[in-house]
Length: 152
Image (cartoon, rainbow, N blue to C red; front, side, top):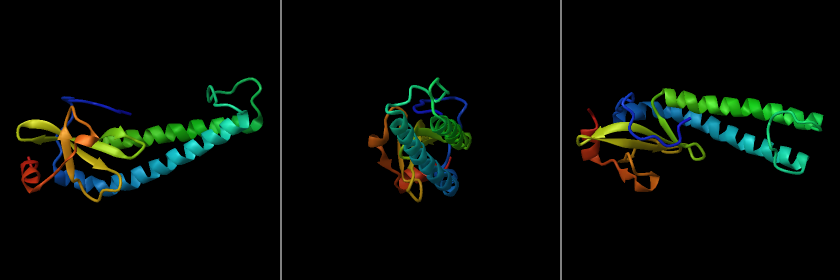
């Protein structure tokens, strides 16, 4: 899973309409992944409480109880599924910027330059963009003029 990516020539430029068409699928998938993350965090807390310390590994260790082994096995499966879910989102063309909040970017082309089209879980449509070397705090609203220029 990508957490921070700049320009990659193998990526295509998206239009606002194309990203908006993906939002229902993204909303469902990201919702599932945020729930999965919460469940993983709960299981990690349960394992830590059971062990009396933070686990060093999710692999079986000498002295692990049956319960610890069960939780570790479940965690490994849940974490693999979680990672695969984000990979599925990336295969749709998104770049995962912050999985904790469901922050995704898509490459766009605006005024002759590449930008990130920025979407966050909970937003009904694509409404923001920012420069490739800028982050979430630098998001700018997509006004009518920018939307027209992003039609390709």
